[in-house]
Image 1 (cartoon, helix red, strand yellow):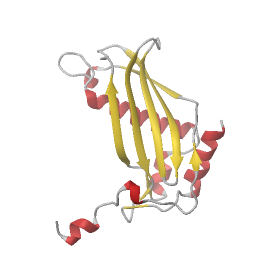
Image 2 (tube, helix red, strand yellow):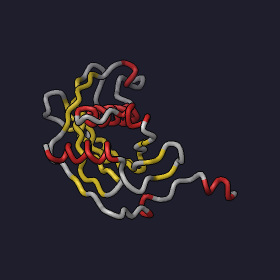
Image 3 (cartoon, one colour):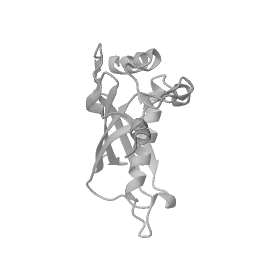
Length: 164
């Protein structure tokens, strides 16, 4: 790998050590309802695995919006929250026409890392279809590097989230 390629890569998340760690957690789940549409499914009418990831991101962005952090405004400030780690467990399928509840919450925040949890349940909340975890980091959009600390607007909104 050339040195120009190496300089464009972000450091591993384990290399981030904040000066003043901010830890936050929330027990409250944010809920986002979806109905399975034809474009969410494969040819058998079963939800395609990548659709769940899109639903999870939508729920996370809407959760942040509900806390006063508009993602578009965050981008304008030069901050991005890229996913650096993702894991999913598929428990049972959803099919065309089903209603699902996508539940998300920030499980923990340490420095510039945010750990989110997900549960995708049936509309009647009787069955779990997917569980997942996502790790985000705050990154400077212009420099393409992980930030050393959260921008004040992000820190304030996430701290507000944990107080509810």
